[in-house]
Figure 1 (cartoon, rainbow, N blue to C red):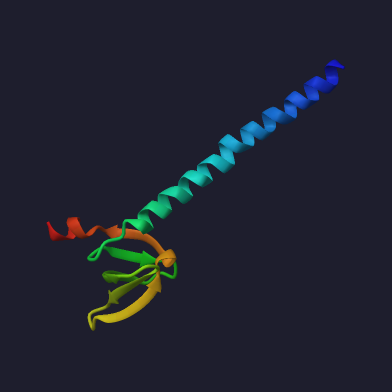
Figure 2: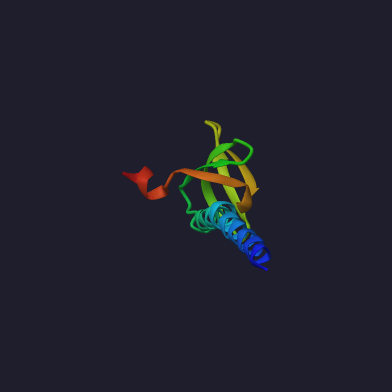
Length: 94
């Protein structure tokens, strides 16, 4: 009887450890990425998942229009394709 309780306790401890070391940090990172994508502003310089670097010129529901290069080529991308914000609009104005 004592060994079965110990076995169950070990399994419970392993699941708790799995949650705190793997699942919880992943959920936290997903929340940070979602917050970043929801707080995009016109003028932010971004990098897409595909490596395209550009400046946001307009934002719609789920799409973002970015301007790239010296010839000001415009590309429409999904908001979910934004990997990171390199320079925030308010920082670029300073």
